Image 1 (spheres, rainbow, N blue to C red):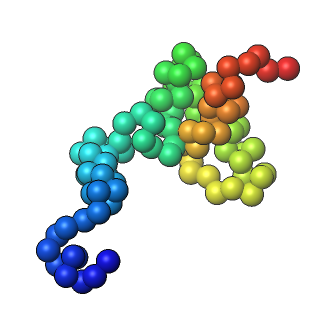
Image 2: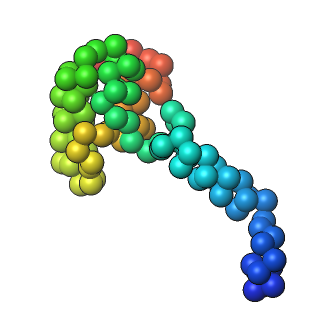
Length: 96
């Protein structure tokens, strides 16, 4: 990509789509349900139909597991993909 293209404001379509998506996420304070990397206690509570206090306990347990595997965690939030995997939302099978 040349400097002339940058100066004129012309962006490739994929980059333009990404920029628009980022602007939308900023406007909605973190994006839509599946756009965000982490789930909050409110989201966990709604997904599991439990209290917010219990959701924090679930988050704490899942983050402890992630830490043991060497991942960095964010207090009070849990990685969405890991949460879905652990509660078996992705596979649709019954856990043993």
